Amino acid sequence: MQKKIIRRTISESSLAQTDLHPLLQRIYSARGVQTAAELEQSLERLLPWYDLLGILQAVELLTATIAQQKNILIVGDFDADGATGTAVAMRALKSFGVQTVHYLVPNRFSFGYGLTPGLVEMAQSFQPHLIVTVDNGIANHAGVSAAKALGIQVLITDHHLPADTLPSADVIVNPNQPGDIFASKSIAGVGVIFYVMLALRAHLREQKYFSEKKIPEPNLAHLLDLVALGTVADVVPLDHNNRILVHQGLRRIRSGHCIAGIRALLEISQRDIQRIQASDLAFSVAPRLNAAGRLDDMSLGIECLLCDDEIRAREMAEVLSQLNDERRVIEQDMQQQALRAVEKIHLADEKKLPYGLCLFEKDWHQGVIGIVAGRIKDKWHRPVIAFAAEDEKSLKGSARSIPGLHIRDALAEIDAKHPQLIQKFGGHAMAAGLSIARESFKTFAEIFQATIAARLEEKDLQHIILSDGELTPEEHTLSTAELLRAAGPWGQHFPEPIFDGTFDMLEQRIVGSKHLKMTLSQSGQIFSAIAFNVDLNQWPNHRCQQVHIAYRMDVNEYRGKCSMQLIVEHLEVL
Image 1 (tube, rainbow, N blue to C red):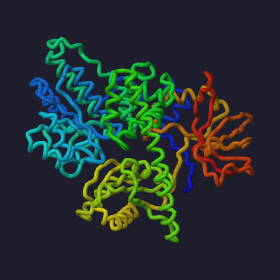
Image 2: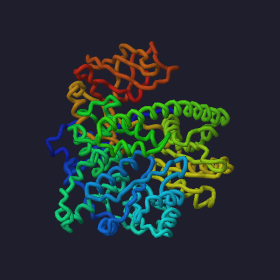
Image 3: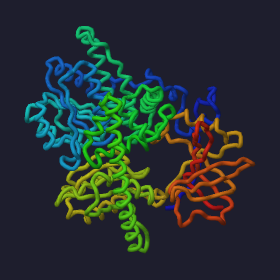
Image 4: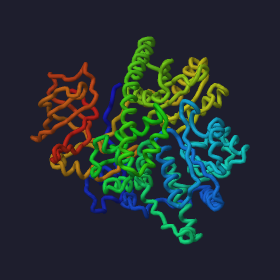
């Protein structure tokens, strides 16, 4: 897939009137930041909880249940967002003195996603009076109805996009439901339940609950390490509110004020806790936590996040890391099969690949198809759905999309035009899940391809790398790299700065079997650079004397010494 470097457009803002570093003015302006207030990351800048539709009713329901000492059951999801959200709910309620609270998370291989009727049946063993969903529920109409039929009240906390109708829950808190004015529509599931706990604490404080119970009023900022991890792991857009949540969570972790489970996962990932960035949570901690839900049971991940014993947390983190290693092996095999399948499609069609790809192998692992879909999407830059067998009759699919194509809306269009073709679906703009009949795969693939082709143009399939421009020799320093490192958190829709420029190639060699280590020069300066996962058919290229690269600036720490390194995202021979 050809990549093209395009420099970002810098919008007008009032940042030029501040004492902010000129490079940061340029970078923030290119990301749509208009005022210095949008860069403030204190907790006082968080959006108010009372803007969330249904949150007052949620608090009333929770308060009544707590007062009557009736059982509360938290129903989470089997990904990192759901796991951290479940841990937030459990830790918050227990800090409020609630002893009648338990959690249940569906095993993806037995129950599928969310509050299903089967999970409700299993939940009866806890004798719940109230079920509180975390990061799920908005698409679980049948499950909610099953709970209500048994006399169980249901509070949905979710962030996924709703269908045309809402489940018959007692209360729904979801910023994406109709009529909600909460400004951060991108908040993760863990963020929604955190806000519910903030509102509940405020209400209990007004009711003199803590003083009457002789309970020290809990500081919910202690939960921000979990909120930061879940927010980053779910790859939600880092709008101002989400950046505050992540920034504050990272601050707590760096200062050593994090839970034992997160500390153990960071240590086993060989990450320096005092210097961690959002990317460390995304690429080191989240995959290990997610591995439990992908290959086994997310209860292990949740228990790790609920554990306060350092030794026990370390033991669970080691098991999670081993599961992640197993996941990598499975993924690599599936990815190779997927690449071969795409190559066959490419060869069979003399023109080009379809705008949208549907892939299926009968022995693919359900827990890994999302990662495989993402890898193929990254390579070919088009929407991809990878399917695995759910049972003898059904397939489960995981979809990943590209900028410009709202994947859940595309599935909704297919569902509207071809009723019964999709058994169930849900998700976001960039990721979604669905189930179809096994016999419908070919028909669905054809309809999906046609739907995507109608929504995209040829130009949308070109992988664009947005650059923040060139750096001057004075900016090519370790201090600049440190400045950028501290200017985050960076993430989805608020990406880490990428620069581009022309460099002389002095040295090049392959390290770690598939990474290109380079020594480059520009304007008399010498730079260490590395490009990960290069095409070994093209590199090393010893005829290359000059390259145009898109790169990030990184701080490389080795034996206590820091140096600046260029992380190359794309390189072209000149």
